[in-house]
Length: 234
Image (cartoon, rainbow, N blue to C red; front, side):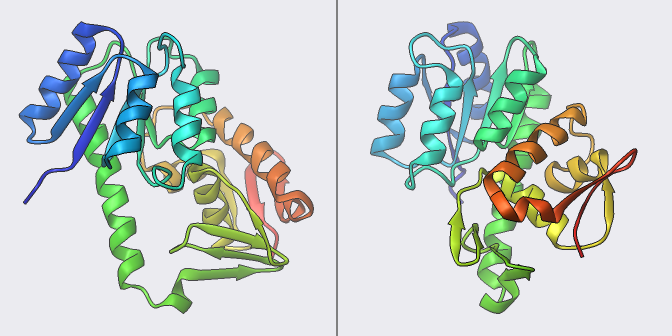
């Protein structure tokens, strides 16, 4: 069985070689580049299964690369694991809101790197398997005037499409799947990203603000429960 292909985008030679070496040891197909420009050239020519992306790059920065990959229909489905030296929550939240799937803060353990990559690929494979096996009707969640299509990763409000990032889509789907239920910020993080996701629950507030803005009039369905968390209006 052919292992997934991974593109490592990191301008520091030592770190790029360290990441590539550990991924190669696990049997993955690995290509490494030192700039965002090279990353866009490669992803534009051939498909990859995952991108490990440094945020602090010369020229085109990592957040811009993330945005471009997620906006391009050919690469929008490719999972992105961010590398950040600063460990600043603002950078992490910005990346997640652009559609990145996970992040690793430098310095990092190679074991943590491999575990995160495996988890993201497993999550993607699980989604693909579930969507392929479900009946088309089971893939559609309709609540109020919102229609959430899991298989197509699409959301419409009164037949008008709404463009959401991967993270925003998962948050909306998580809340809308149980209207009236109140979820804490940590429960939302666990439900969307998995247990022990190392980011503060402040990130949920930022994502909810962005989600409400994109939903427009439908944003009223996401209600704040003071002192607890959020719920989708029943």
